[in-house]
Length: 488
Ligand code: PLP
View 1 (cartoon, rainbow, N blue to C red):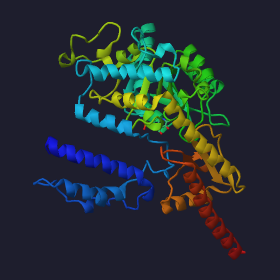
View 2: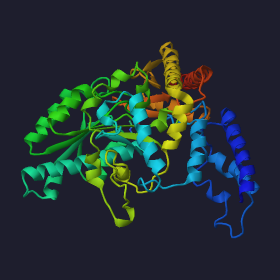
View 3: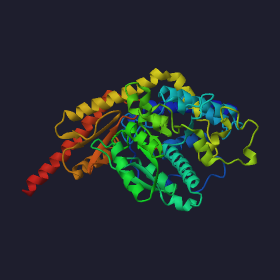
View 4: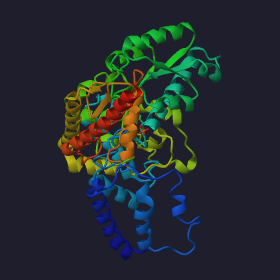
């Protein structure tokens, strides 16, 4: 493909993408294929002679689309949102064209510098304390990670390194292995599985802290476990708080937990993967109060801030904590502006696990400039409003119950009755392929989660979703009733 053909195909592709997204609602949101469906649709070997572009595009519809779960359909309500916007897609095209691998300042100065500045812009939108910003003199700063899971892992590994050094400073005879066997990390029993996974990868013990009736960890709950563990000779070193838990969007009490972690010399990381975007709205910002006690904070603009995957923003109070844990400096990565005085631009690569880094800040820059803070706030508020509308529909139907406070764009609800009944309802919903939801478990109950996900979801989609759910529930309850009558 030469430049002339690229111009033609590129324009066609933009039309194709716009058509796909404009008409996405006409497609069933959930695919109707069996595992292994794809292998039989394409050859067993890569072509020796080139295929034509037309044939490839035909195969997109024949092979790929049948196996797509349409995350950007207005009828997609599963998991949490995957952000998407046209400015981010255009920036991603440019990112692919530039194609730099921005692991250091010298590898592409604009890539490294824009990332640092965008994380400062975003930190200011969230009103993060000054200590998290890089500015020109700061000790903190932000870095773009691929996912929240990576951010949690990076924070845990940095905390582990810091704790080992601290213990060895007091008792130089203690071996690293001995200290490692005593280190304990903590998180909520409602935390995302990626937190437990970070401990598994980091080879440290992790304990789950019980939550209150609203599924949030409180200071006293952590304190109790810490006392027991310290008395048993263990070394608490890390706590991962969640703001906006995956099952129910609950918020740990970081204003209580933070001082406790600081007092105990424990690293506090905050995982706000989904909810973090909402903190740009003044009405949600109080939920972030207490962030000043944290050592690191992370959320995913690729979930709810209109920046396409992947873009996970992580800030640390002291860059040196992270850099100190991961720094490697082979000769081929060294350059003369390595430690350019105040900004440490050259050390970006030391703040993440992979060496190679895409120019992800470009899509932040495009989105921030084309939406503005007000546009981003409007997006969050619209989606929260839709969740509240859905909550009202559920509350008005006595057969259903709401299972957790609806704070942001997630509604947890269920049919009053057994877990089996709700499992059957979800099975019917999934099979219908008209809307897509996933479940969660809260206090032993099987609960349905409806998250407002797509940028194109409107009130009519919420109404249609509710009509569909109640219709399927009606069929299910009727069938159950008939079965009971028959048994009698
Ligand atoms: N933390 C929370 C609270 C989440 O809800 C999720 C995913 O939904 C994650 C972490 C994992 O996010 P990622 O896929 O970016 O690792």
